[in-house]
Length: 306
Ligand SMILES: Cc1cc2nc3c(=O)[nH]c(=O)nc-3n(C[C@H](O)[C@H](O)[C@H](O)COP(=O)(O)OP(=O)(O)OC[C@H]3O[C@@H](n4cnc5c(N)ncnc54)[C@H](O)[C@@H]3O)c2cc1C
Image (cartoon, rainbow, N blue to C red; front, side, top):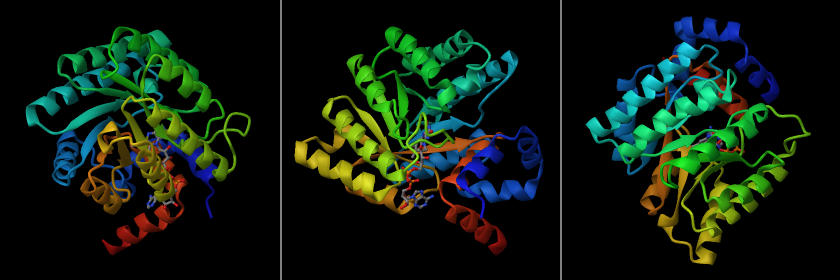
């Protein structure tokens, strides 16, 4: 059986990334988690998500971009997306990764690139979420976010924190002082025990503690998880503290627990679905497989069915 670490290791192999993108049979396996390779396919997916009572967040798949020119392509793609959201009237914001905008080339490049997206989103009254990546860029991501947040409003740009990181409670307290809109997730990268809790129970306990801190802060946050235990803890805490259903939103990934997405939307909770699309799907796809070994059998079963 492939372990989580092995799958995450494979997700970082450049050679396999190229191979997988060209191998059309492999591409077919991805349809459960990825909305397609084109913006048209992603817009169609979001229309369908909106029709089920959920909002969305576009993610143009790409990360660890290593040329300045390629980061500019990413900026153009996101400006196009923001325009497309306005033109089509779909209910969606956008999620970006700073390594997609050049964080590993130079933090200032990522800042300038992200700044052009946030500036355009503000003009259009939309919102930009900065995803959180591996721990080697956590601080740099927070630093760029803080720079942007000092120039733009609370409802213009937000960030993500991961409950598996030991530092996250401190980060949450600091960011809430600004204040900042935070998406809380468990974390999807392979991290050493020195920076991340190795035991799932500790990750979950920290998730609940940080969730409570966020909800009690009075700022609108995103509770991103498919875990019924985390969802129940959130609902229970909100009810106990008299926090309204409209004071936060749940978030889930495209293709995962669609039943629960619809149920929560029907129950009157905000539900945002993260919709990844594009040609660079390989690392994202492998992280989804790493999260849950059952996903490997699920995609293979669907593939064999035809
Ligand atoms: C909207 C959104 C945005 C995210 N953004 C980031 C980010 O910026 N950075 C980052 O590192 N990570 C991000 N993630 C990924 C996240 O960190 C986790 O890796 C991922 O959500 C899996 O964790 P979980 O909370 O669903 O619970 P897990 O602990 O993985 O699973 C707990 C339970 O949830 C249910 N479940 C989980 N997955 C499935 C599935 N595929 N099918 C059916 N049931 C399932 C099962 O009941 C399972 O036992 C994001 C996740 C979401 C939902």
